[in-house]
Length: 356
Ligand code: PLP
Ligand code: COI
Image (cartoon, rainbow, N blue to C red):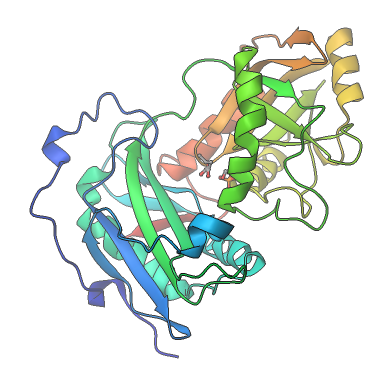
């Protein structure tokens, strides 16, 4: 099979750059979009070659299956600039693999790895000036595939569109994160699509999350759908709990997203002498630890959220506050992982990929 290279990908440049109007000193998350996007169509059983075009609205048939049957999957990744303005990605092949794992589950044709990787590099070269230089900011990258083929028949579409759009972004959460441990609703179930980054997984969370927000929380921590006794993950993050000096996190399963930040943190923690246990973590155990004072910290991990310390959680009407630690695992691990991402330290794991 022939492979494509970033330098051979067709580029149509915008005539109306928004770069000079963008306030890079006050970036929120995912609200302004860079000048270009990568686009690629699937028709007649194969993917056409990707091209870089100006960021623009799409025209879709009202009967496109994405609207009716939610056939869509996405990824989240970031591009970082170091102090020399060199551009880096963090474990990008893992995002490509996960996009295709998600696609397979939603009966969406998989995207060739070179279309994803070389297409992304071509896009980043054109929009290099959109990558923030400020530490703490980065270019959030959103690859996604959706059913653009039409028909009311409830079956997979015959046509799909793959896009990579990007947004210079600051932090995902503003301020402290308070979570509610969910006791009624479920995000996913055995045999379902929880492990996929399917758009519908997020739509299904919005209503229970709105209920939690009305009560003063920012996110829901999902528990297993069967017993609601074990924590699984949050709306947009995996969850770590520190009891005494041990870091605990739930094992991945077909209900939980296999987070790239999660698995990196496990490796970094172990390499830095932090004991980690990947095992089922019960709500009972967390509450008992909170009452005894052995619950030291909780944090979420994700590409958008990086490492977000949890200030407190609510469970069955009671709020539990977590102490503010001067020397937390969250701050130590955040420094270690972001130093690798922004090329401020050695990369002993070989995760950083330079975009030349
Ligand atoms: N869990 C969910 C539901 C997510 O949406 C995300 C974000 O991508 C994560 C976990 C963290 O995954 P990653 O670290 O690969 O970004
Ligand atoms: C990410 O961290 O990249 C995510 O996909 C979370 C997203 C739902 C904002």
